[in-house]
Image (cartoon, rainbow, N blue to C red; front, side, top):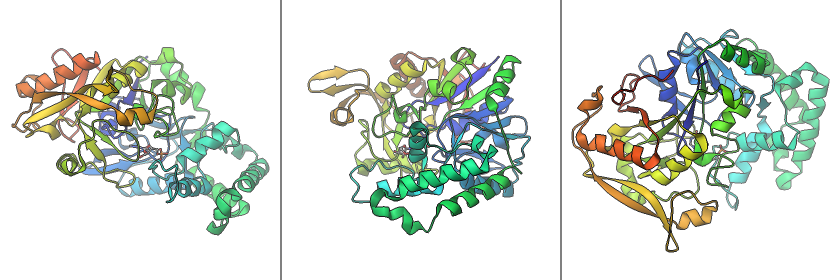
Length: 434
Ligand code: IMP
């Protein structure tokens, strides 16, 4: 009963999309379990990069079924746009292939507007969100006023829930929502119409017993994490986090699969670090030094196009992720991007007020004051993008990977050296993921 979770070990954008894409070739089901349209997973489809936001990466493969499980928040209009976009490019999206949990919550237009409002200057609580309405949707979920797919069983009740929510929210921020021209009725009508359209492409169902049955039958289930451990609402750099549990525990609550069903947890980390949005980032390079890495690594947000902040590999952050997620193996991505650097730096600990810290402090202000303790290693000049055997990697690249294993205490599952699906190297004796 192989159930493999793929989890980001940094602040998102670790290359989980390409890892899921690779593993999805042999999967029966690929499941998104948290987050919403804030995710940006880039895969290569028919030679072209394709950025997916809500759809699981498995959708581009013929074999696996795709699932948006109960932990995901679904913006139905954004999902319809994404389906139209991928369909135009030849991807088949049908109710037989795409299942959505009736327990999943729905992002409505006012969630997007509220997210944007909070981010507008002179807001003092700006987090640099993707403004996709994800945070406000989870606020309603925890407040027990959220709208779920299950609410479509009684349209009158759904209508009154939307009217209640709208009434609660319009007074917020000097009534700016009223300027949107939206009304409770228009929200209800648009949602019902979008829901009817969605039924042509997805089956809305109780995915919990279904997924558990598939797991018991021994089907290969891939749980596709979005964002990363540093953005987890409990274990990330709060308050500069996303509003869901991005970690392995979130894969259980977000699917209804119990912890005992998960057979492997793969952590994905880049050979360096990036972050989008606000928040502390100890190993961030001075801004003028970031451009080189950003251009080589094409480090621009797949959802917002924002330039990503770039810095060195942070073993403190990844160690923290290893602890929380219990990774069975680490996938190290974008090793090729470091080619040509005379030296490569790794942060092994932080220094704060004369003390050494080996794990992330809870307070973001403390984290912002932390100075990384760096170790420097020699780089390599040879291009490695075409290498497909571990032993052919330059010895300095191998040493870097070995040092990351030592610092994190987790073995390498595989390393990626390029965007192509086969640009993967398994360490000696490795190779079995499922
Ligand atoms: P939200 O998830 O849109 O609420 O944004 C909260 C924080 O998470 C912001 O710093 C975003 O930039 C960050 N974030 C959300 N989704 C992603 C992602 O897929 N990759 C990287 N950062 C993300």
